[in-house]
Length: 234
Image (cartoon, rainbow, N blue to C red; front, top):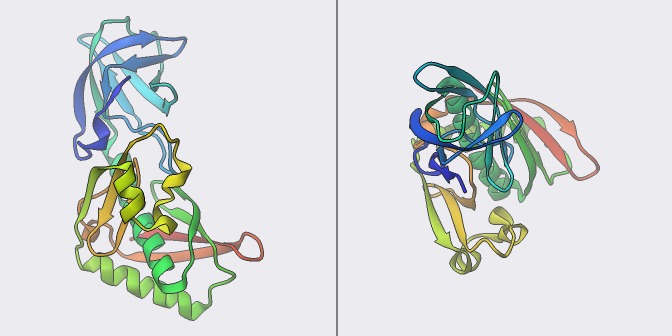
C-alpha cells in the first residue's frame, strides 16, 4: 500500500519515491504527496522526474492503492523518481476544502442545515445542504459569520482518533462516521478551532485567515428541501 504522505505533510511540494508497479498507463509508488480524487476534492497534478526523463501526472485515483496516470512511456519498476505537485492547484483546493468545512459548521449551527454533498474546484466550490430555501437576509448572515471566522485566524489541525472514541465524542450530524466501513478503526479528524471537528481525509490550510473573503455567488434548488450554494474565496 502506498504511503500517503499528503495526509500529514500537506505543505510539502516535493518528494522522493520508488516505482513499485506499472500498468498500461499508470504507476504505483511506494510513497506519494499526490492527493487522489475523493471527498469532493480533485486530484493533484504535477510531474515525476528521473535523471533523464519527466512524466506529467494527469490523474490520481485511490482504489486498492494509489494509482498515478502518466503521459509517455512509463518508467520501469524500481525506478527512483522525484515527484513535484502543482502547488498552486493544490493550495487552491486546500483553501476551498477548509472553507467548505467552515461553511458546513456555520450552516448546521445557524440553520440546522446538514451538508449532503460538496464539490471543490481551483476557483470556486459548491455545497448541498438540507434547507428549503435561504433568503437574501440569511445569505448576508452566512457571509458575515463566515468572514468573521475567517478573519479570526482560527487554527486548523488534523490528527487521528480511535473509531470508538470518535463515535462517542464527535457530533454525528457532522462526522457521519457510520458511513465508513467498519474495517476502518483509526479516523483522521480535521478540527477548526472552537468551530468544527469532523472526519476527513482531505488537505487543508493551517489557519482560516489563509482563505480570503468568502462570497456566495449563486444557488440552485435541488428539491423541496435541499439547496445548493455556490461560493468563491476572494
